[in-house]
Image (cartoon, rainbow, N blue to C red; front, side, top):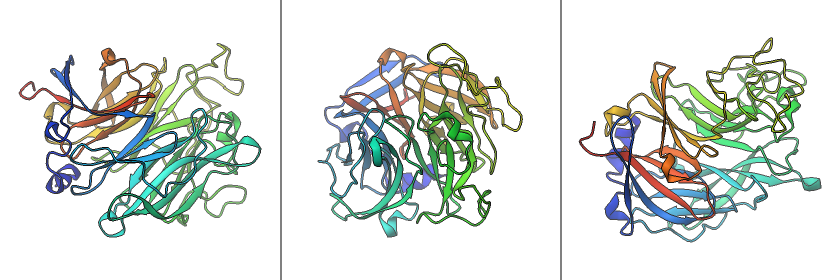
Length: 384
């Protein structure tokens, strides 16, 4: 039984059109047939991430200024939940990702990543967890379980995706705070993928555990600004993606202890059109090649594998949001290999921040705007 089938058993037809009376649906072209896009809810201020709650409890949505909202199955959007930590809401900083504990049915824990202020106007990514109250109005007993050290960001490159691996670990994908060289420094947590236990403790089998001069939390390093992470449902492996500079956005399948190159190896250049000073070229000794790379940056954010039964034409596809390109990217997979790319929804003119597969087999997108929206996307019935 697939993950989607299990969800379906608990929450059939979640957020369908009948649950959002004011919803509007539009039709768009795609290679696999007409796309139907429904606006589920609007009026979100720079929404960043969403997470489905089990059963009929609804969906959690983060807004970057520091609000966590509950979208009920009826389509009602709650007032901001209490108990959310204070965030560094400057530039790209604020309240970022949200994830639900794998044991939510018994522990009701919700995990948040966010930009946290430090000294001297600097900030770093933090992750904490709190218990969602039974009435779903607040997070109780919120505790920080991870802090990116040192705090170096003045407002950008926080990264910040959270993924549970199904084996008792929590992965945190981090940015390098626009301090390029730190991505190669093993004594710092910038530009790293981190692996922890859900309570924040460090597994003894992490690749740098016990190594002098290295942070034991690190799983992989040499990353720039990771804003997408998801488990491949067919292999169980974690995939991440990250922003390049001017060019060189990339997907990786991070392996323990490996170096993914930034800033020594990159397909991009500086925004000034000059080369990256540290770069040796598109490759560098001792670093891994990206699994997939865009020479021209779409500015990717959010990622979801499609393994639901509703739209067979999307099986074994990977969907990624794009901010600068303002599209939904569909990548067709043959095993792990990307064999085809399609750009969708360019006519919407919206920056797509997050992409998730819903329990009903539809894709759910968040648009990154001051008046942001939650969109439900699927193929027209009978078009496959």
